[in-house]
Length: 289
Image 1 (spheres, rainbow, N blue to C red):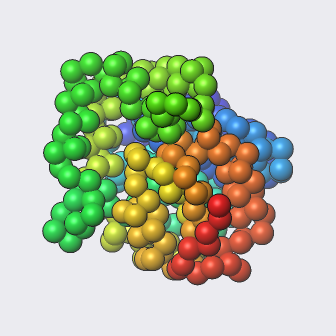
Image 2: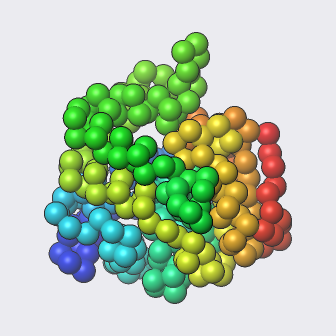
Image 3: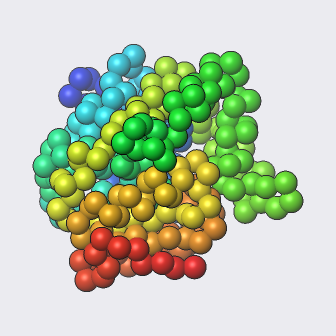
């Protein structure tokens, strides 16, 4: 089943590895399901069924003009779960923008079939700076992102992935090959989806969705994340999601699926195998260095 047809007819590319309890992996902006490959392999080898799909507009999925709001994206997730028969004892794992799909699925679809959730470097609960979210990202900064993409998308993403993976003037936690690979994934996406999804994750308020998390939830975030700063995201989400465990990776950047690859895989496996959040720290941070 390489593709699933969403309810509006959009074809979504899906890959499934392994057998066992389903774990749906939702990628970040502006990448594709392939960004989850190391974690998907670890899950499959541990007896889970890893399901990863390309968000509409990205990777090998269709690029329709519409449907880049979180209600539609959550419906896409529901359709993938239905068509892959992942509707019972399932776990949702959302990276960055993908965390928003997890949150909106939990509220819009009542968390149907989900028994575990994980938010990795997630944009939840709210990115935008407003009067009631004063530490958020200023609107002008979000507009600069859109302007940079419109002006020269290839050049924009060359720079973007430096912060994404924590590349500095002196040292880098990733190779040039990783940067080239991520850039190639980004360039698979259409211009319209790239801009529309940036607008969606920058302006969608997920705070009303947080009470819908009624399952053990693992939150993982790097303290050195410059793309989605931890203070406005993970630490706030952990305060307002009941039965949540926050693990902070000291000094780590945004792209944890590469820079902290093995550690992330092990933390996800530990959580999925033992339900660590249900027996662990509730609504407070479990700090790890």
